[in-house]
Length: 71
Image (cartoon, rainbow, N blue to C red; front, side, top):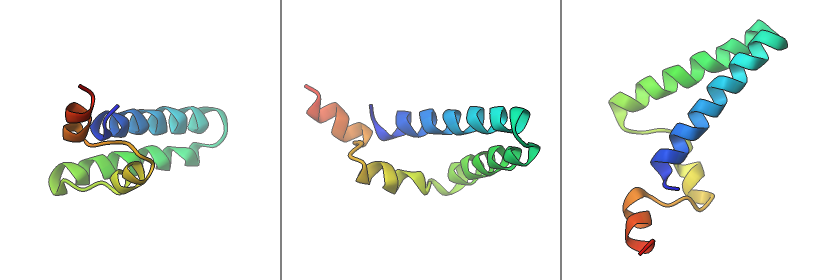
């Protein structure tokens, strides 16, 4: 799995988890949903996301690296 797909997967997990926590635990957890949404919005304009360096350190490859090394 490459960084782009991993990033979308993690964003979806964070949104669904924060919605569940907001429903079952405390409505303040919905602020995490807002934070993820704002982060996705700013990354669309700046082409930078703070999760990408974390994923790179975890060993997730870029799309070009994954394509050239998976042959």
